[in-house]
Length: 272
Image (tube, helix red, strand yellow):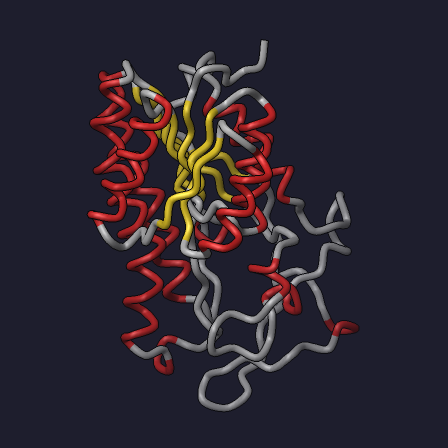
């Protein structure tokens, strides 16, 4: 029997590279899937592809009423909500702290941190009504250390770790498991295309060559961890963070106004 038969999972950022991988895998394992996102065309196309056990909802994770509508959709369409995957996230253009404007800082924290907070807040009563369930917050290895030129993103992912552990303490007695996954550099458009306002993609600053497995991570790597943590038999995994892999970037070179210049690939080396 598929692991998620008769269960309903809400995935935010569900039309992106990682999100769509998660959505398809849950669906293949028998779940009803609610695809949350802001790209209505891609979301509707994915829901149509998957059929009757899929719904797309336009979900702005920074808006509590949008969250409420998404959770209602899950319960009205499929009877209950059993798992939430807080996957939506945005990256800041690389800049030192002194050249990072407040609007950028606020935007990154609004989506990555406040969006996760609102998801937990709104989904928790629905999970409780279902008799328990799971929440997995997708963080980052940048939430385990410091990374120059990415202060808003790093701060948001560190905060998601603390939020996850607090939610785990509050919700554990309701049989709601709360965990994080900390992916490294995953081969998706998020990594291979520059962030808004940037000219260089994150992937340009990383090389897998010094590591035991000399490749970038794939969305499926994260998806397999996610299925493990959300499976109903994994009750002992609660309040933990699973680290996918850590890619150590070379020391960035400033190029005017705190921006990073594109590194010479021949000079790439792991950070000591």
